[in-house]
Image (cartoon, rainbow, N blue to C red; front, side, top):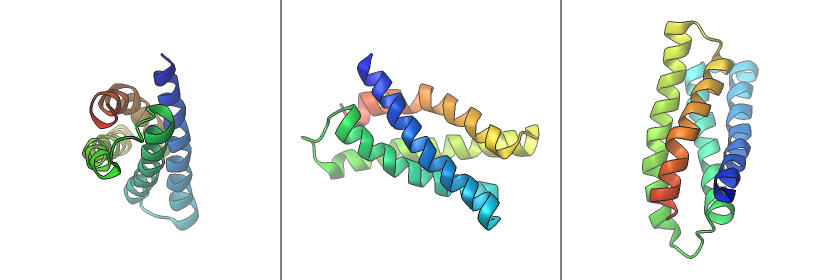
Length: 123
């Protein structure tokens, strides 16, 4: 249970990075929301990998390249799920871009990211 809580805390920290970049790009630089979402997701992914490796799963005894490749595979799925979900909710559901990102990020984080990081990336 502690690992799950730490994983969610790391995810929250990575989400803060992700959303900050997302909102700054859309609001401050008028970047198309989908490009901003992808950029934020990349930044949050890097933060999440480092926190997961060192703090959540304490998996520093394994080689970084192997973990990084596994993480990128999982993260690539995350990127597709989040970006596709944000696009679908915004374009077809008329949901605000921030609300869309929140909804999709929560669903993907609890259902996809945690399980694959625990059982595949950092095992």
